[in-house]
Image (cartoon, rainbow, N blue to C red; front, side, top):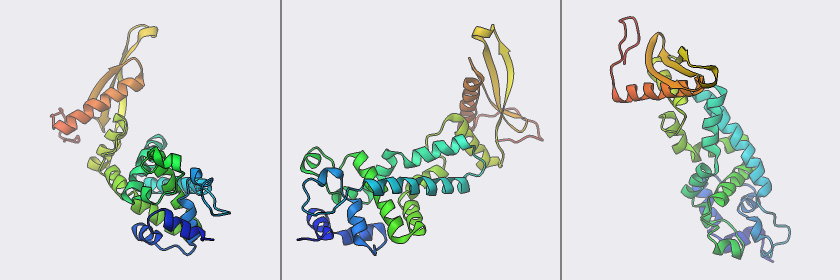
Length: 253
């Protein structure tokens, strides 16, 4: 009877090629094989004892959360918990992990049942994201946390670079904070300058400041909405180079 590793080689691209793409060599090749097994494949495989990748996926998801959280805390020491959570979500969501899987051509190695294969399972983002998580889990078990961390950071390098460059979609306040921190080593603040109207229809006016300098102003039915609009105006002023009156002692663009 064919070994489990042999089954994987027969059904998909050679595992040696995948290990080269991953930049590592497994001591226990069966862990890599298991990471590639979609649950739909089990009923059709002639390999007793073969398991799906779901347990490894569970483990890999935890590793991804840890590694990405640690990386973000190191790279963005001034961001709030909420902003860090938003960045983390952007990095470990299925769309991002599926892109990483595509760069590794993981769909070529994924073992699927006939029905799943016929409906495009090799290209389905959810399958690609899950197999990437499973491989991270397999690397953890095979080589430890340091190797798993290195793999995650290497595979998510393009997304991490975009994040460092401020190109990841954040809300306007988070985006403004990143820019102000990079440009002036400061953190923007918000000041409510007016609250007008009856309690049931009050309109707030808020300014976004760096130090004592106003970069933007916004209005909204809540302070949160007004702060967001003030940040949007500040971003526009910075992006377009619009002059904002400032004293000699204040920060100037």
